[in-house]
Length: 126
Image (cartoon, one colour):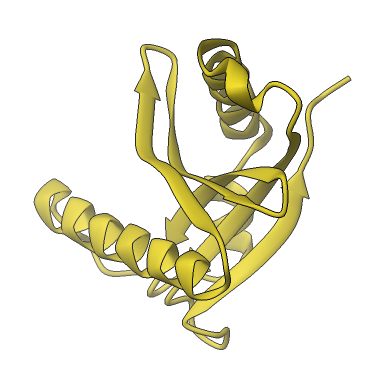
């Protein structure tokens, strides 16, 4: 696997997030926020379509595979995304009655479409 500098990794990630956001817009989503941050975490893209608020994690994996994706999106990362999404909902009451979904958009992973959209990739822990 190639070694990337922090700067080139950020550049690859930013390009992947733009590609994912463009994909969502092309598929009828409205982008609500990009890179929404709290001290505890970040949501790459928050989008809305048909009354569903989607918290999307973007993974740009030009040399990755499903095992890489699984490693990158472990339970700890999922928990952080969920907690950040809960904070977003508390801070943005207008979405409090929205149905919520956690999606993953995988960008540039070999043998998959340029943007591979996994809906309901994970759910809140009970």
